[in-house]
Image 1 (cartoon, rainbow, N blue to C red):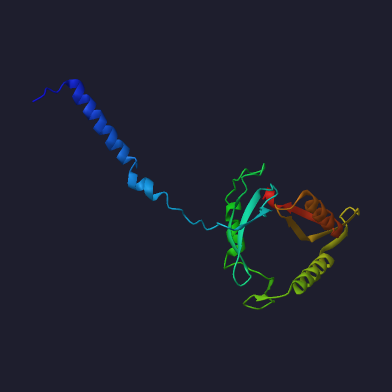
Image 2: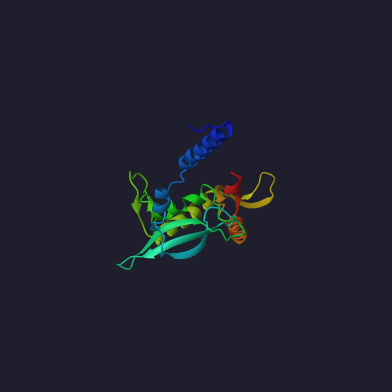
Length: 196
């Protein structure tokens, strides 16, 4: 029987430990062969459309993947951050990451809703009806709460019965326009969603 030296025992032990560790980390020929199978991605062959996140004024870029169905309808497959954007570099905040749900949620309301005084349920109405109703309510509130002079006799021409809250998705121009419009109506209570 050949004599085994301490060095030979150490070599054999290290080789065995190395082989065991490699197998434990997934270095297996069968696993390596199975990864050659091509996976079908859900967005394979989809059309890329670039857009901007609607939630705030930062302007994060989105990429929407769509596919045209056999019946001619377009199906939205995925929305994700655009990695080529210098603004967000592909990352999205929690609200931006839900952009897909904004577009495809079955709970999404797709038309204006109106509940008449005393009614117990909402009904879908046209945009013309909704905008007309808003205009009527603004006019009635403004007329009922318009103040021409303050307690000292100074001309103020304001309405204190209406408040306006701007959205964080407003661009600078939209915010400027909304502020001018509301000030023109005499509103003094203006707020911005980003500050709330």
